Each structure stands twice: as C-alpha cells, then as structure tokens.
Image (cartoon, rainbow, N blue to C red; front, side):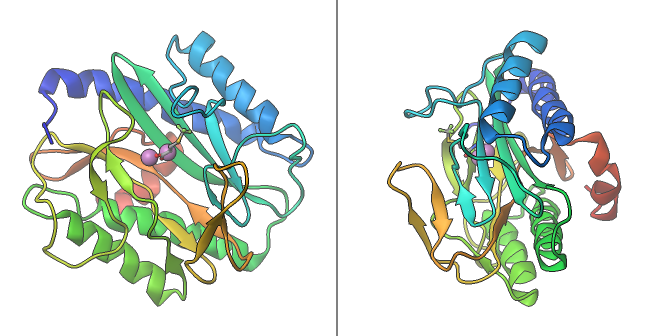
Amino acid sequence: IIPKTEEEIIAYRDTGRIAAEILTTLIDHVKVGASTYEIAKLAEDLIVNKYDAIASCIGQYDFEYALCSSVNDVVCHGVPSKEEILKDGDVVNLDITVRKHGLVSDTSRMYLVGEVSTEAEKLCKVGQECLYKGIAQVKPGNTLGDIGFAIQKHATRNGYTIVREYTGHGIGKEMHEAPEVLHYGKKGKGVKLIEGMTFTIEPMVNQGSRKIEHLEDDWTVVTCDGKLSVQWEHTIVVTKTGVEILTLRDEEKEIAKAYKV
Ligand code: MF3
Ligand code: CO
Ligand code: CO
C-alpha cells in the first residue's frame, strides 16, 4: 500500500469533487417515473462532457454503465435498466466512479423516492451514520479494525446487520486496490493507517439478515430475505492528524462537522 504524494492528493481533490458534484446533481433526477437507465446515462454524460473525465465503471470487468443503481433489496452492483422505473417509497443507492488525473474516485449515497416509510428512512440514516462512524476512526496509528468495529457496532445496536462479502478497498490509479476495508472487525487489528493512504469505506447495512445472493445477471446482489439494504460510500485520504473526505458533498457539511471529520 503506497501512500499518495502531496501532489497526487491535490489532483485527487479534483477527481473526488467531480464525483461528489454528480451525486448531488442526480438528486433532482431520482424521482417517481424515472428509469435507472436514464439516470445512468445522465451520469455518464456529466462525467464525460461536463467534467471531461472517464466513467471508469464502464468496461470494469464487463459492466456497461457509469454507475450501479441498487434499489430496495438490492445490496450493491444493481445494473441500470430501461425497465426499472422508480416508484413512490423506493430507496435507491447510486454508486459512481470517476477517473481524472489518472486517479479514480468512488462514492455513493442513498436517494429516497417520494414518500418513504419511517423504517426505510431510519435504515438510510443509520447507514450514513455507520459510514461516518467509520470515517471518524481514520487517523495515523489507528487500524482498519478500528473502522470495521465502529461500523459494525453502530449497525448492531440499531438492530441491523452488516454484509461481509463486499468491502471497501484501497483506491488510486485503479478502482480496486489493496487493502480490503472490512465493515466489521476488532479494535486494534488489521493494517495500521499511515498518512497518504487512500481507500473507500462503503458499508452495506441490511434491515434483516446479512445473507445475500446473486441474480442470474451475475452482477446484482440482493438480500436473501427480501428486506431492504442500504449503502453509503466515500473515498478518503489519511492526513497527518486524521482524515479528509475526497468525495464530500456540500449537503454533508453538517454531518461531517458533527463527526469532527
Ligand atoms: N463502485 C463499486 C465499488 O464501490 C464498484 C463498481 S463495480 C463496476 O467498489 F464494475 F461497476 F465498476
Ligand atoms: Co462504489
Ligand atoms: Co468502492
């Protein structure tokens, strides 16, 4: 795991800002009647034409879209589709990656479509808190285990479960690099964090059992029990004293402040 140089981090801020701005732009487009296909195409257009960047999900393995769209019981890697029309009460994760300056940023958030149930809204909120609890553990000398422990603890105390098969990951020149960033774990265990490391934290939090299965398309991951799953993701860099969120959105200023990150 090679830490980024100061120069790379300066470039990375720009890459991260682009991904963040696009997730914010998409808010107005995630609404009843929209297809996940048209949302993915809009995201691709923004990445390529507005920001002069590369939609690095396209062609990663054999994925064909600029983002993954994971609705309700879809845990992650949902494939955008013209047939998938968003309806009132849906909770949707949009997970986007952007390559610019030779660096990849990776971030996702939940979108609430129309009137969402209280339970679904709470799950979304706790999912975001799990991400921030993890981020708050990031500083030189702490370990990946500290991050996983904090995330798992918050999910569990709210009666939810953490998916184990998918993890956060190192990121930089490639979308997926070492190390794996588990969203569960033991305090003080695992890789020790050092200044300049860049990785994602992206907990998948399930309403019911943590058990998952794959659909025939070999991409879409769903909960076995059909209950909801949520996910929030940021790309972060370890700083001298703590953490910087490279994909922070303006709307998150308050929550970031509350968690002192
Ligand atoms: N954005 C996902 C992640 O958080 C990866 C997407 S897989 C791809 O790791 F094939 F769509 F790129
Ligand atoms: Co992602
Ligand atoms: Co990721």
